[in-house]
Image (cartoon, rainbow, N blue to C red; front, side, top):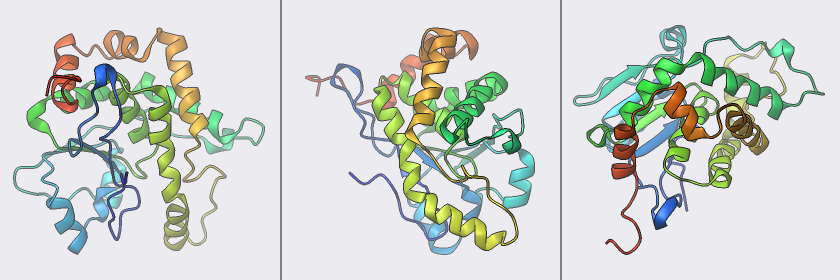
Length: 247
């Protein structure tokens, strides 16, 4: 099963389809994609991207990141939303070897669920609407902010925690390229030890802590993000295949 879609200038573009959900359903292919910065799209990459007929792009980066690195090139019939979900800037100086990369990342992801409430809800409402698909969710590396939002979507869809964790960890296949690209562009800038890493334990810790705070991921989405029952039902209706035995 190949999830990654190869681009010359993108490292981490992949389809979120194919995961098993409840009642014998699976997540549909070509409905939701996750990616690193689409500001790098150009030439043959842009042609390949447009062939996916993406209708909505959700950019989770800060506006200053968009200004610096660029946004997805405009395309007829494609809607773009800049929905930053990260409030507090990362203090990598707070990282310690004793704390570990996974724990440090999980703590940052929990901050996103506190600080990004309004835009997380808007993003989920966008993904839930059938006529908005296909949707691409992206940030800078397609790992942290994108990982949080994708985990919420897959959890609402009834995908198992193990598969959500595994989907997150697939970013590790792009880590070597992330590091090489960053080093090439910033030859004198030091890298913190967790740069580009997506240890499975980070997502596991995040989900465990979110459940401990709110009872379940869905409870967080309903009570904190205030996503409606109708939106969740619509998400199920178009993002998932029919239940087993119903065609």
